[in-house]
Picture: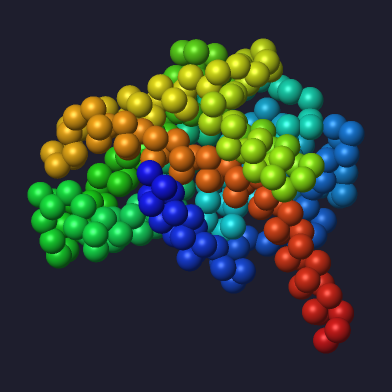
Length: 256
C-alpha cells in the first residue's frame, strides 16, 4: 500500500510543476477569517462554485492536476448537499481530463512492474491496464461520492481546516478518510469511504484475474483509502502553496 501511495504522490508531483498549475488572478484567492470569506474572493462567471458554498470558487484542480470539485472550507457555515449535487461531484471527478492522464501514468507503472502479467505486454498490455485503471477510478468515484453518500446521508466533500500547525493539518486531512459529516453537519464515521472502496475493490476481482481473493481485495481497498488520504493532504495545502507562488511571482515582477 505504501508503495502505491508513493507512486501516486510521485505522479502528482510529475504533473504539478508551476508551469502546469492553474494560477488564478490574485483577486480570486480566498481566505477565511472568522467564518467569513475575505480577501476579494469575487466569483467570476467562468469559475465553478463549490456545491453547498456558492460564494467560494477554488481551482478545479489542485496542483494543476488533482480534481478539486469536492473541496469545501471547514470554517464556513455548513450547508448540506442535495442528492443531485453529490452526483454532480462524482461525475465531475469522473469526467475530469487530468484523471485520464493519471490513469495512463498508473497503467505505465503497472506495465513496467509487470503487475497482472495476464494482461500481456506492449501496447495491448498497456491498453488493458489503462482500461482497468479508469474502471477503478470511475467505480470508486461513484461509490464514495454519490451512491453510498446518498444511501447513508453522508457528505462527500473534503472540509479544509486551513489553519493550525502543519502536522495538525496533515493529521486532520488524513483522519477525514475515517470521519465525515452527515447531511445534518455532524461528524460521524465515513461509511462511503471505507465501504465504498471495499465494494470497488471487490468488483475489481472480476477484471484482475491475477489478484483475486481476500488479501488482494484488502490491499486494493487500503491502497485507495491511502491515496485518498494523500489527495486530501494535497488539497489542504494547495491554497497555501498557490498564495506563496503568487507572492513570489509578484516579487519577481516588481524586481524586473
